[in-house]
Amino acid sequence: MVGAVSDFLNAWFVREILVHEASLLRYLRRSWFRPEEIHDLRQEIYVRVYEAAAKSLPASPKSFMFTIARHLMTDRLRRARVVSIDVVGDIDALNVLVDELSPETRLNGRQELHRLGEAFDRLPERCREVVWLRRVEELSQKQVAARMGISEKTVEKQVAKGSRLIADHFYGDGPAAHARHGDNRDRRDGGGRGRQQGD
Amino acid sequence: MAGSREIERTAAAWLARRDAGHWSAADQQALDAWLDAATAHRIAFLRLEAAWQQSDRLKALGAGIPAGTMPPRHRWRHTVETPAEPRRAGSQATPRPAHHRFRHLAGWTMAATGLLIAIAGWHWHAHEVVETISYQTPVGRLQEVPLADGSVATLSSNSRIVVSLSRGERHVELQRGEAFFAVAKDAGRPFVVDTRGRRVIAVGTRFAVRRDDDATRVVVTEGLVRLESDSPPGGHRQPTTLLPAGSRALATDTGVTVTAGSVQQAEAFLDWRNGFVSFHDTPLAEAVAEFNRYNNRQIVLGDNRVGSLRVGGNFHWSNTAAFVRLLEQGFPVTASEQGNRIVLRHR
Image (cartoon, rainbow over all chains, first blue to last red; front, side, top):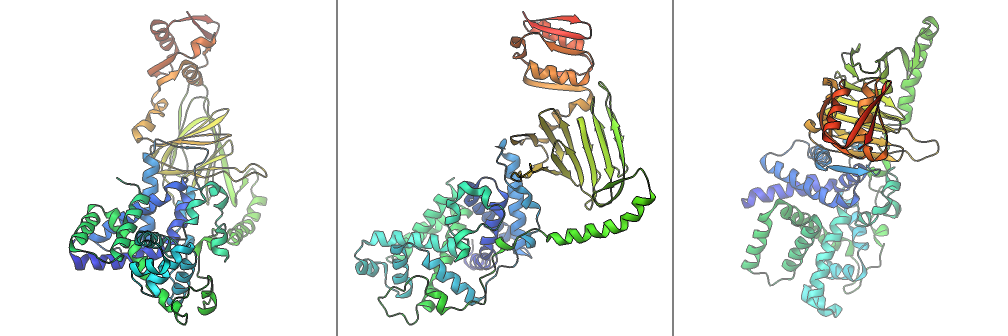
C-alpha cells in the first residue's frame, strides 16, 4: 500500500471505527451465543471494514460497521452446520437499530483523558509502572529496566502487555469482559456491566 | 491462519520491540512484511499502536507529580473533571420504552371499543378487531389456501390453522400438522405463526412450521424468520433464534436446535408439497411415523428390532403399498395386513 494513502486510511480507521469498539463489543455479546468467539468476530469485522474502506470510504462509518457485523453473524450462522443445542444466543438483538442499541459514544477530550486514566489504573502493578516510566517520564526501555531492577526483556514484555490492555480498556470495555464467559446469560439484559461501570 | 488473539499478541510483540529502540531498517522491513501479509495483522497493529500513542497523553495526567513517583491509583477522578460518566450505551440500551407501545395499545382500545359492541362474532385480537378463519385438511390431502393479505399457506395432511389478519399483525395458529407459508411482503405487519408456545415471525419469506406432539419444527427456504418462545411462568425468558434461509430448527421443551444448510437441503424437507416424503438413513420407526401422517391406513411396527432398520429414498406418501413392498424386498421384513393396519415384523 502507498504510504500516504495507508496513513490516511489508518487515521480514518482509528478516528471513525475504533472509537465505537465498546458499542460493537456490547452488540456482539448481546447477539452472539459463543462468547469465546467475540474476539475473533471483532477482528473479522475490522478486517472487512478496513478492506471495504480502502476501496471507498463509507459515508456513515458506524452504521457501516454494524451492518458488516450483522452480515458476518448471519453468515457464520449459515455456515455452522449445527449451531447449538439450547444455548442459542439472543440474536434478536441483530434486528435492533444500531442507534437504539448504542447512542453516540464519542467522547470529548476531557472524557477521553479520564478514560485513559482509568485504563491506566486498571493495569497490573508492574505493567502500570513500566508504562508510566516509559510514557510519562520518557525513560527508554533500558532505563526503565535499570530503574526497576528487571531485565530489558521483561520490560519489553510489559510494554507489549500494556499496549494490549490499554487498547482493551480504552477502545473496548476491558479484558475482564472476556473472562466472564460463563455467565453470559445473566448479562444479557444489558445492565450487567458489573464493576466496570460501577466505579 | 492464526487466531485473532495470537495475531494480537504478535502485533503487541512487534510494537514493544520497536519501542525498545535499536530498531534497524531490516527490522522495519520485517515488520512491513508481517503487516502486508494479512489485513488482520495490519488492523491488530494499528489498534495497539493507536492505543499506545494515546498513552502518551498520560503526561497530562502526570503534571504535578514529581519525577520518580508513581501516582496512586484512582487519583484522576479528582484531577480530571468529567461532566458525567461517559455515556455507555449498554445500560441505556433498553428497547423502546414500554409506554410507547402502551399508548399505542390504549389508542386502539378506544377506537375499537365501539366496533366491538357493534359487530358480534368478531374477535378481539391484540389491538383491534379481526376476523378469524380456520382451515383444515383430512388425512391424505394437501390444500393450498390463499390468504387475504396475498400470502399462501399450503396445508399438509391432517393439519389445521386458524388465521387472524389484523392491521398490526398477521397471526396464524398452527393447531395441528404442518403448513408451508409463502408470505407476502408487508414490513409493517409481521406474519406470526404460533404453535406449542413458540412463535415463528417473518415479514416476507418462505418457511414451513410443523407441530408434533413433543416438538415444533421450522424449515426456512427464503429470507429470514425469527423463532420466539413463551416464557414459562416464573421461568427465564427463552432465547430468541434467528433462522436464515436454509436452516432448520427443532424446538422441544428442553431447547432449540438449529441446523444450517443450503436452501436445497431445506427444500428436501418440504417434498411433501409435491407428494413425496424423503428419507436419508432414517430409522424405520421414524419413516413409518412420517407415512402415517398422510394415510388413514396405518403402518404398525410389530417389534422393536424392525423399527431400528434404516431406510433411504424418495417415496410417494400416498402409496403405502409400494413402500411396504420395497421394505419386504430389500429388508428382513415381513408385512401382514390386519384390517386397516399393516404390521411389520423382523424376519
